[in-house]
Image (cartoon, protein in one colour):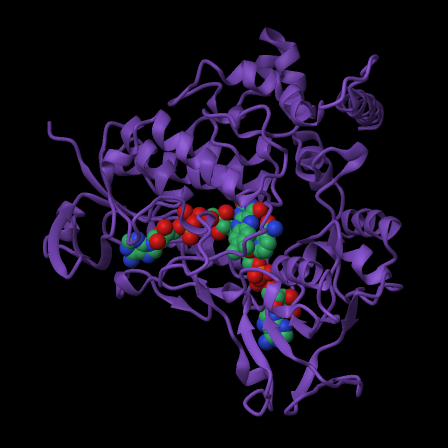
Length: 533
Ligand code: FAD
Ligand code: NAP
């Protein structure tokens, strides 16, 4: 039998892992990448190409290396826990080399349209039109994986800012911001307190005369550095904690998180306190913002009511004069113009089963990969989505009926709307653990803790209490990786390695302490359950 041909659109992290997933399932991938290199958003350039996401020079990732790596290809142990964007790209290059992915990519080739073949209801095939250096080409594929990212199109809501057309200073979107040089000595206003707004405020404040950060509803500020100095995601994303959050009310979890964040900085004192609860907004992670606020370099302001030629007037009646530059760190919107009617995006909302499959296609041969805003790393999620999609393409897994998928989508959207404040940035939210466990279940690779408790208790304990790293989904089932067990049990070593730059004798492992504390808590907890229920 000839292999099914799959078009992979985009060679960012989602595209690279999708190519690998196709190869693992013996499918034939052809990846189209509009630029001349891999890496997508993570390939920094001063002047990025149109149609590709773009970052500033200093971006340091806020998801740690153990939580963001591919499940069967670890990040070198001496790499820092939170990597600079150049190291992320280096890692993607290593991955592409290790699995020989480059030969499947057609660079400088833009996908212009993806249309159903006339016999789609029986063949499930797609006609893909590409353009490369002015030449159009038409190819037919058995499946399509759309990996074009969702941080490319700047959301610039100028209509919400009356007077901006009169403003005589410079204004730009954070997508265009590359470095702080041109803001030296200036008074700069940043709109939006997402991760871009926070990062830019901190960086620019080192050389600007004054930075203001305007937020229409405030934010809870997390820190990359979690308990005992471990990466936040490592110390907060374990199965045990996930279980605890499931049995506690959301209000209790919010109270716990808010108390914790207020212990670091009283959000009211710093002018940051929002009306909404901690879990109702995509987290802003910034270790340095409080320092810049307490030293007066960054001043927190409310929403801008209007601009004059030189000033910003805020809703609380205050004004700041002599503003030289305004940076709109107001996020992004996404679209799939080449998909025409197959996937409709309305107000940044899209109807996809498990955020991957359009529910209304006669054949499940189109998958969107990486269209999620997770509370955690996107890379392992894209990878698991790719593993699932390729199994569906191959016919190893089936999707439920259209009506069941629609019901599931409606439920997921309802839950999202209930939990998050209404904002165009809260339309594709997903919790890391929920998403990974659900996808793993669909792929058939969710580890069986109960059976492991008898056959390999050491591993079972780590799976229960330790960070839920991507390698945990390579222990069994299709795509099993023999290195997974060792990778899981040596997580701590790789976290410590880059920081062990000065030898200290008696090293005590803090994660073992955390694990022991969790273990004791788990024992007490189960004892209570057994005694009383
Ligand atoms: P992208 O990296 O955007 O890649 C898409 C690729 O598709 C590009 O190469 C593009 O050229 C190509 N393409 C697009 N259209 C076409 C077409 N029509 N034809 C051919 N090729 C096409 N996520 C995290 O998990 N952790 C973080 O800490 C984190 N930090 C971030 C920081 C910033 C500043 C931003 C903006 C985002 C951050 N993200 C983070 C989210 C980020 O989107 C993902 O990490 C990741 O880059 C998504 O990869 P992707 O492959 O899905 O998309
Ligand atoms: P974002 O998360 O969408 O945040 C946009 C901000 O702009 C929010 O504060 C939002 O407020 C505000 N905003 C939007 N429209 C507005 C309007 N009309 N009026 C006033 N305020 C408005 O965008 P982002 O910060 O660019 O982040 C995009 C993605 O990149 C996220 O996934 C983020 O985690 C990631 N990122 C990561 C890093 C890092 O790892 N270091 C750095 C930057 C970005 P509301 O909340 O009120 O809508």
